[in-house]
Length: 252
Length: 245
Image 1 (cartoon, rainbow over the protein chains, first blue to last red):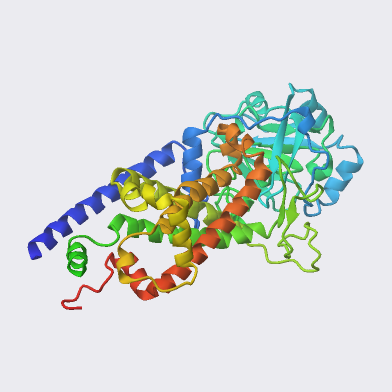
Image 2 (spheres, rainbow over the protein chains, first blue to last red; image 1 turned 45 degrees about the vertical axis):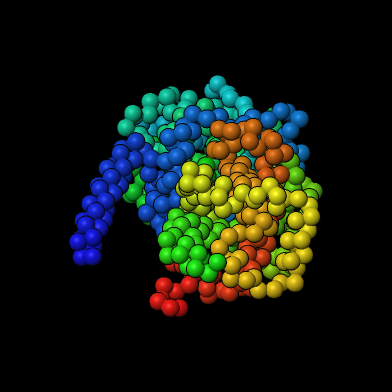
């Protein structure tokens, strides 16, 4: 009996050691290949890490389904956002002529673009679905320059791993990895359904990431920052969402 | 008969270890999925058919409960606390546990003959007359005899097969169909369901069926002797392993 126990104990110990080593190696590799989301350490971060890693391994280049013009929602809905402040109101009254998008961080030098400049760039148009984590959805036609175009224009450094984006909404910021930033369907949307992008839907500029839920598609964008790490921003969880309890990655 | 049963029991447990472990892992993850699913549902207790739907569009049906969001017209003048953050984290984590455990159980079921031996009903049991007799036998809710504990009857077999091969795959499929990245990889898997909102509606109904199964299942366990049967699903043994017991 004691012999069996000892053998069992040894085997269990060896298996556990091998398992721990295996997990350690896997974690190192996952970190290196960008498979660990910044909120991996939160209470339910393990499931989130599995989802993010699986989608980055197997769906890095997949394209969100695009819909026919006849499928554009006639009654889209926009969740209200916090008051955007006096500065935003002033810009809005001026037709956003004075509004600028700042791009900084890991770029040769910080630059900014006016709305007219953004509208003059090669434009991509997509009819895609916006799905809110609450359960509702709508389809719309979005147009604007692909984020990838702006990143190459400003000469984003190859070390950059994330694009952080900030909004006029107070304390609201988010980030995406380069897989999403360079994805052809990730747009700096300045137009919706053939017209200008209305403010309730994110005007003058909304980041459009159709492979992620609505809350990653932050409205009223004002600044993009390229960075190689997220641990020094806010609470180090990658965006304001995990600080409020929601997952950083919303591709599910 | 008694000695054969005792001999068999000495040789093998009523439930193989893998069935017991996966049973409890699935139970735990299902409870987590259920609680968090309800929390997610109350942030938008409206259902639609087709690709899209929101508060500006007509519903297929509404659930007459208050919501955790003030943007949803519910008829109630109060808003429930918003629990979506942790609920969504836990829902997807529990879904991973359920799917991985389900795959392990499925592989075991196929390759170790568990499905064929223990769940596939005998052809002779499937005649309408036999089924009718079996249903009639169940209706008075009487306590099953000891000898029935060693094998599943035809109604159990059919129910378990339905849960394992129809309801669970369907609830996972319709759940994945709501993932925007899944949709980008397998758009056809959403189209055949009638669209993303249809998938959400089906997800809701399949969950209701799974809850009904759970209620009947637990009631049947209670009827058959709760302590003994739950004990058997933990230890694998139907009787305590005592001499002369």
